[in-house]
Every structure is written in C-alpha cells, then in structure tokens.
Length: 78
Image (tube, rainbow, N blue to C red):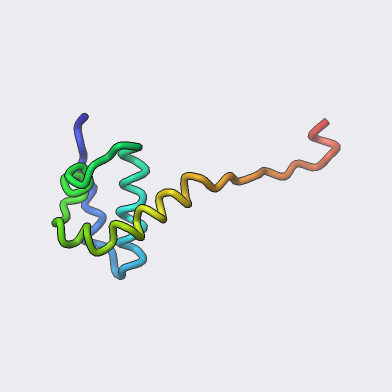
C-alpha cells in the first residue's frame, strides 16, 4: 500500500481540527491501520499522535457509524 502525505496536520489551527484530521486519516486508511501508517501519511511525530490518538479514534468511529437517512415525500417513495 502506498501512503500519501496529505500535509493537512500542520495546517490545523487547534486541537479539534487536529483530532478531525487524524480521525479522517484513520477512516481513509481503513481498519487495521497502524500508528506508523498514520505518522507516515500525515507526517507527524509519535508525541503528536499520542496526544490526540484516543479522541481521533472516537471521532473516526462516530463518523463511521452514523447513518444519514434521506427523507422522501410519501408520494415519491411509493
């Protein structure tokens, strides 16, 4: 698997954006991604990853399990 460095992490302005960035990287890399995969993909250090890994994991899980339901008028649904 070829990992791409997306350079988004250094542009994050606050912790919330960093968590979202790492969480989206986890989703993009898929189940079984390792810390090394994330570090290589985002160009971050182990210390940076350790600081937000738990919150990023929770973010990735919540984004992966939410199902958006489309509402369609009953006349069109039938």
